[in-house]
Length: 460
Image 1 (tube, one colour):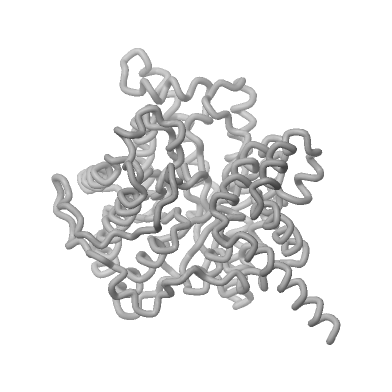
Image 2 (cartoon, rainbow, N blue to C red; image 1 turned 60 degrees about the vertical axis):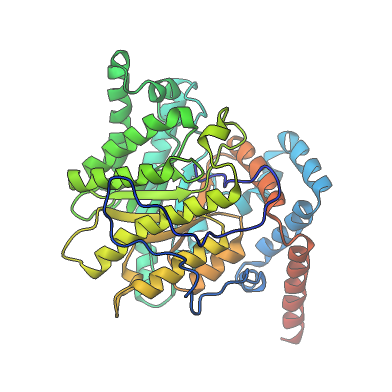
């Protein structure tokens, strides 16, 4: 899942491994690059300033950002806000918290969010309809309504948004190179009893149900092909470990069918905090080579560390090991992408890497390598093989910094009725509190920007 980044069980120092990686299992990729931070060149290494981001947002967004920063800077106020959320009127949530973390309740509101992000330099969105059932136990009608909304967003949001962003870019109205739009799917939210089907996908007694599940996936991907004009990617989010083999099987089947002839329609997700994730990436690339299709993967650190029953066996036990796994996985994908850049007549088995991370060191590492190893004259604005993805409302100042470097950055944008997104908003408040290294400095930055604007108006 992209929704929730890995958090250590206790406080640990930030770390980027400089140790050489072990040789890949049963594969012979291009030479692996070690310690990519050594020659980062002009790539910034410090955390970016909040000021640059705040200067780009509207006055109402600035006000709510500052007020919300007050809440997330105080553990007490955060606990009060989260406790009050279930009883808070929907209209109040939509006015205060919802615009920061969610994209809208309908297609028009989501497109407006996309335009606002374009003005900030964000290339596109990864939409996640937030009414999907967590374990596939909702009514058939609920699933039908969700699928209708998801499929409708291809034409209702992206067909119009992508056309507008391309026109704005070609006329120099914006400097943001357009990227494809993405639609994130929760695998357990696609049909009734999805979790049971995924857990038993390879058992003969579930063969019919498994084929039904694949047909649902297939219809979503085909809809993106039919109405997305080549600019919509379907993303399979990750699930808990006991379901993940079924998810891998589903996303692999869809990649085999749709990721051909240089066209990326389907993207999977790999949680790099899992001990077997690097070997899994190796194997997927080998399968793509043999099957003559392209792998596209969204790499995240992980989402379920608190709920995995066997986490000491399945998950890297330290943050350092997880950071190394994420960076090694990113470098493995980049090995093949760079090979494709330098030899465009030979299609790479890796079609796309989506770097879904708020870890500034990892982003710096990947940016540095892209700049260092791209062929002379290579036009990154026309290339979509590496895309950075970050949560709406989380570390937006870091997003701003990445876009200023000319990187393609998308925002993960949940959308749907306010009532249905309260659980998501609750998590975002909690995570912003955990991630608020700036603490009250964000509040002061917001106040300073308001004062600056007021002073500018008074002098006008």
